[in-house]
Length: 134
Image 1 (cartoon, rainbow, N blue to C red):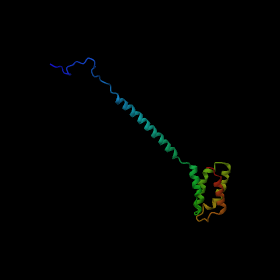
Image 2 (cartoon, rainbow, N blue to C red):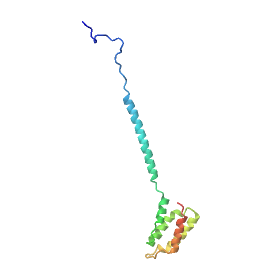
Image 3 (cartoon, one colour):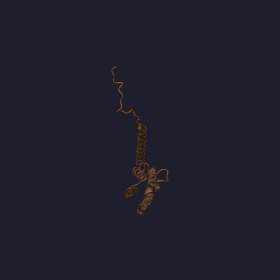
Image 4 (cartoon, helix red, strand yellow):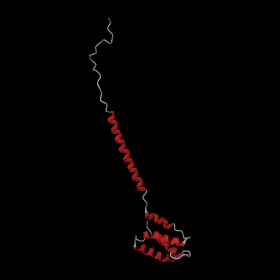
């Protein structure tokens, strides 16, 4: 009988051992860290975009005040009075200028048919616009 290689006893090699598998634990850790990073990045982006969309009332009123259309004098007088009121509390000078402007616009408000706004009232309006600090 010839000895085959299968019959030789192996004394130097250990039997196979079971290796603990921790890949599922690593997957869960990576998943949690990824979710935390993505959620914090989306939260910061949301706050950044939300902060940019805040409306500055003073700028909006100033733009509206500059765009007053004098073709309709009654509406123009009401718009100047409404939008100009916000800036009247800034200083004593603006307060007096606003009330002076409102006094010049009074004849254009309470009548059914009004004539076009005169140049003196328009000049007070332009002076008031130049005094406003936005």
